[in-house]
Length: 399
Image (cartoon, rainbow, N blue to C red):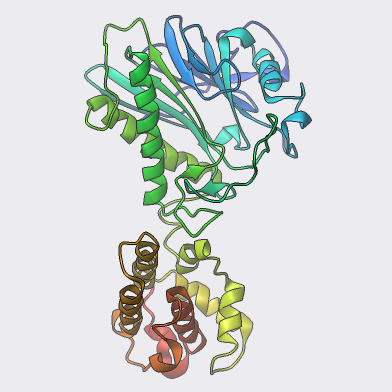
């Protein structure tokens, strides 16, 4: 079962302690069967928790394991803030306390996450089985801050200092069952793996290496479970049904949130130029290569053909094949010499794959000693530049 934006009625936040004001106006988005309520404010999402909930969060405010939290919120920090000291209150914990009060929650029994994502782009997905309900509530931005575990660091933290780097996947996971502390920790592992699986399925690029993103460097998570439930579950790993529910809810919710915030979808990734971005290849790089190849140097005409050709599904598939060879070489799964040889053979098969009868000068364009991506750019740049030669443009199949 999948649910989102089930109720648009304006209401005060629950638990609400204050009344009027633009910063207090909220919309009830969703209510779980366990009576957890999800509200949207202009710059925050608040999840109201009934009594008896256990929480495990990565928040600066009442983070870690707690049994007294009544509200968990996700907040969009103001634009232009680059360090904690620039926030109202002068620090992240102080700022989160201010925000909690502003949206009608008690700072002493609240926990908060921060992000640069727009709260209008929240995604909510629920999965259930035999009375066990798992709800994922997420905002997600990856286009600026996407990274792969092990990528080069952006800073070294000293004396408690830190930096704000935009782009965050924030997740609030509500589980309609009672879990011991260790199972809640396991739920975080499963949810994190599911988030990474969603990013891999979208081939989301790291912005700090040539790798595929596993998350962002600022991701946060909060897990809440029902300590009053008669359903007592001790396993949230992949083999358990609870783990399956968590995995499916988080994968779907991550992809929905990325579509809403970043327009990152399976469809948007069906583009050769998009796939090459994580290797630092741009249209400018293509034109630099193309201008040195035989043919008329008409930049605007070249780029027009390149963009059209880039969306050809067969060419996207061939691009994915070649780039996966590059990945497997970097992971040590394929010897580099063998990988380069196979990649060049894929390039030489492009005319047949694309239904082209014309000859491509592969001896001039490819060299197994060169980097695979360099060879690929030369071959496809030649194709785009010479598209009108003997009617090649008309032979390029369109989706």
